[in-house]
Image (tube, rainbow, N blue to C red):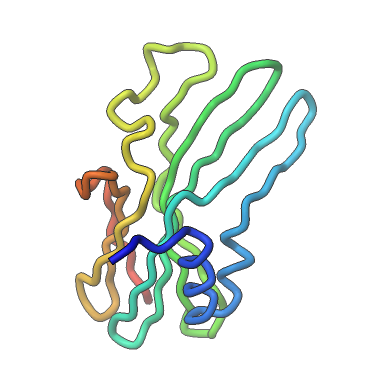
Length: 145
C-alpha cells in the first residue's frame, strides 16, 4: 500500500470535517524585520464515539533580522457541542533557538515530521508527534467534550 500524500490527507480530512481544510493551509504572516511561516507536515483522521477528529503536525518558523527560530506542535480539530470547529494545541516546543545553539532540541529536530492519532475513550484521543520510523515523540491527551 502506498502512503497517501499530504494534499490527499488534507482533502480527506476536509471531506469528513468540513472547514478544517482551510485551517490546514500554509500561511506566512509578515512582521517588521521578518515574519512567521506556518506549515503542516502531517495529517490524520479518526472517528471515535461519534466524534470526527483531525490531527495535524505543524512547523512554525520565525524569521527576524537574519535569524530563525523553529517551533513544532500538534493540533486536534473537532466539532464542539455547539457545532463549531474547535482546535486544541496542547503545547508548542521550540526545537531551534535563534541565538543559542546549545538550546536546540537535537532529540526532536527533523525526527518527527508526522502525527499519530489514537482513540483512548469515546471522548478522548491521544495526539502525538510521529517519526518516520513509527516511534512516537511528545504525546498529549485531548478531551473532546
